[in-house]
Length: 231
Ligand code: CA
Image 1: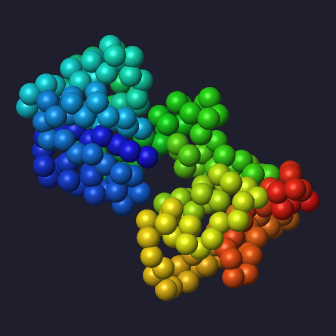
Image 2 (image 1 turned 90 degrees about the vertical axis):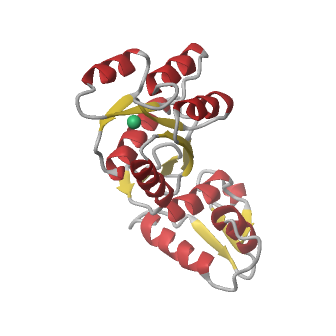
């Protein structure tokens, strides 16, 4: 998930950027309205977090030109104290939500997930295998309707497995895809994470979904498709 952050107060900006990156998001950070505008209109993002008062173009101008260009990327505007008119104008211009400053990064992440949940109602971003489902946008995981908490890395690994049920994924492929390693770090990292995932997703009374192929790797079993390793 790629996020554009436009904020001219460096201290706030780098704090928010770090916080989002810790949550596993990748962040482009612009410190003025003009470069924010250029990024917003030439690159593709999963969300834009916009400060209103900026040197150069304002956050509201950026928002306005995004919407005029039929760009429906989720936008959250952040406003300082006393800028309540900007909030209303922002919402009128098509912002998905606003967050008054100061705010905690956790609060921003919660708002982002909420707007993604709303915009992902098309179902495009929902992965499901048997009774397990994972929403790529809100990153919510559940088994038979029971919510399961995941760390960002656990989620990335689970999503990778769920994208290709029935397919054997080697440790090398997993290390490359989930950790970005193009070498074998010589640890049992993958095995440790697979164990953690199993503990979380294989709730009592449910079918075990991750199969170990000794010396090769792992695969996600599809219980609805015996040919894909289930049955
Ligand atoms: Ca500002």
